[in-house]
Amino acid sequence: MLLISALIPPTHKSNPRTPAQPSRTSRPLARVEKAILPGEDGQVYFEGTYWRARFYNPNCHKTAAVGDMVEVVVGDRLPLLVMTL
Image (cartoon, rainbow, N blue to C red):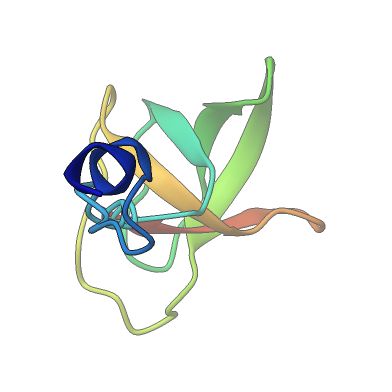
């Protein structure tokens, strides 16, 4: 009897895998090519081409410098609306 029970796999297995941590962002990223200043358009490199971009929040007082990465919040209109990381 002991031999038979040793050959039967257990019915309950613990799952050693932990759920994957969601990434901080699921939004696409763009690289700033011309600084984006509060209330002004800048330029980003996004999906293989250059686009005008401005901050999604019109009251944003941040600056995105050349080389910074920004999140594209609205990418189906011009200018693209972005936010800093």
